[in-house]
Length: 438
Ligand code: PHE
Image (cartoon, rainbow, N blue to C red):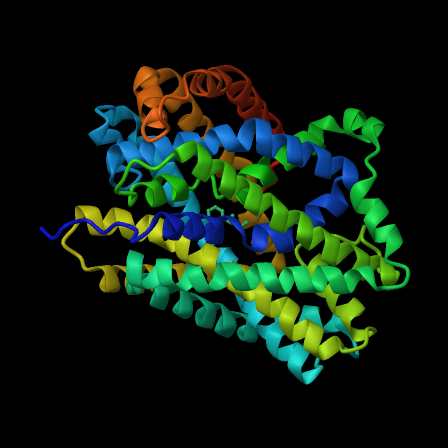
C-alpha cells in the first residue's frame, strides 16, 4: 500500500482548516441567524460559545485525528475503542448530508457573481432570488459547484486542498477587509453597527431557549466541528505541532472573518433600509443584492462580494467531501479520483430536492446543524474527555513542551462545562426540530 498523504507544511494545515471553517456558515448563515435571534445579543452568546465550547471541542477533534492518523471512523479502531466508531460514522454521514445542500447554495453564489456582472438582479432583487434559487437553473449550478469541488479533492491533500486554500484564504481576507472599509463610508450604515454591536442582555435571558442552541450550533458549524472534518485534517499532520496554538489561531481567524462579514452585511442593509428581520436562507442574497443595486459601483462590488463568498464556500465544500473520500481511500481499493467523482455524483442527486424547493434546503440545514452536528460533537467531547482521558492529555501536550496547567484546564472543561453545554444544546435543539416539508 502506498504511504498515506500528509500536509507539506504546518501553515498548509492551518490554512486548510481555516478554509474549511470560513465558509457559507460565516457569510450566509451567521447574518441571518443573528437577524433571527435578536442581533447583538446573539453575537455575544455566539462569541462566548466559540471560546468556551468551540475551542475545547476543536482541540478534541485534533487530538483524535493526530493520535490515530487515519480517517474518522477507523480512528476509533486505532484508539482501541471500536464501539465508538458510530461517532465517526455520524460525523461522516452528517458531512455528506450537509454537502448536498451546501452545494446548492454554492450554485446560487455562482449565479450571483454572474448576475452582479450583468446587473441582472438590480431591477428586482426579491424576484431574482425567487427565480434563480429553485428549479432547473439551480440544479445545473449545483452540478457545476459540485464538479469544481470534486476536481479539487481529486488532486489530493498536498496538490489539491493545500495549494487551493493557500490561494483562497488570503484572498478572502483582503477582499473582505476592503468591503468592510468601504462599508464605513456608507451614509446611514450606523444603525447597522448598532444592531450588530449593542447587545440587549435581557433579550438573551428571556429567549435563552432559542438563542443558546442557535448560537452554540452556529459556533460549532462555523468551526467545522461535528462533521469529522477536523479529525480528518488533523490525521494528515505528520509532526509534533502545537495543537493548542493551531486551534487558537484557527478559531480566532474564523471568528474574525465572521465578525468582519457582519461589518459588511449589516451596514449595507441598514444603509438601504432593508428589513433585516426578513430572514431565512435567502436573506443575505436578497438584502445584499438590494443594497448593491442602490450603491455606486454596485456591479463591481457585487462581483467582489459574491466572489469572496464563492471562494469561501468552495474551501469548505472540499473539506466536507474530503472527510468521506478519506474514509473510502483508507479502507477500500478505490482510487482518490474515482471515489471523489462517484461521491460527487451521489451528492448531486441527494441535493436535487434542495435545489428544487427552498423548504427542503431549510430542512436539510436544520437536521444537519440542529440534530446531527450537536449529537456528533457530544460524542467527541464525551469520548475525548472521559474515555481517552489521560491519553488525550498526552496527545495534546505533544509538541507544546508541557503546558501542564492549560491542558488540565482543557480536559476538565471538556469533561464538565463543554459536555453539559453541548448536551443542553442537543436537548433544546431536538425540541425545535420540525418534520420534513413533504
Ligand atoms: N464551517 C463551514 C462554514 O462555516 C461549514 C462546514 C461545517 C464545513 C462543517 C465543514 C464541516 O461554512
